[in-house]
Length: 253
Image 1: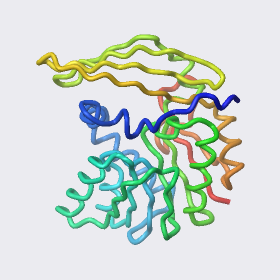
Image 2: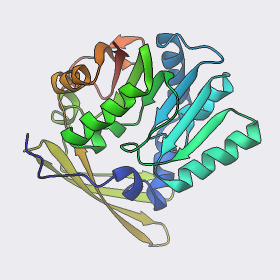
Image 3: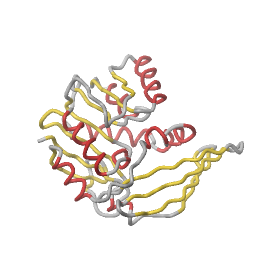
Image 4: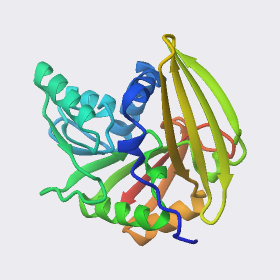
């Protein structure tokens, strides 16, 4: 694949401003709790284990894992998210290490029992960057540890469901998006406009890089993982083409 298209770090340029609040409202608490139950069960985690939450956002997984006695390192490059996690963890006296750092550059002085990369975050990087990220994740995971990926932009989902325009209203925010499906490398480029009820506007541009399951498996194999399972409903239903979400479980060899 060509490498002439590089994504800026969407986690720092897309997930701020009004969209930071939209992202918070997208996931109901029951979804987060179901994902946590899945991660804990599939990863055979218990109090005292250590989990790394890569591109943790506002910490919905990090905080819930910590409430179960798990030691969490939460990494994101958006300072507002990290500060919010610090405040909530402090208020609840939770064991969460909150780290504001580029995930491609992170060097943490420990290995983890499990690592999670949720919320479609793996799709923010081209294949060169993804291999670099997966290598870094592999270096921080104990042998036999589980790596969890949540995505809705793999080829088996995104191409079938592609729409060039869509809109939604989330609370008092109108969210309008125009998309292009492009190739070499395969990607969806998005231009979004957020409009408040008071007429304020915010423009956003982002890229999701689209990989097939086969391509993801190849990248995992190159970086020290084996792909174990793919679910559409965490831990309950195996993934089939066209289902809206995928939960990939890989294991450090």
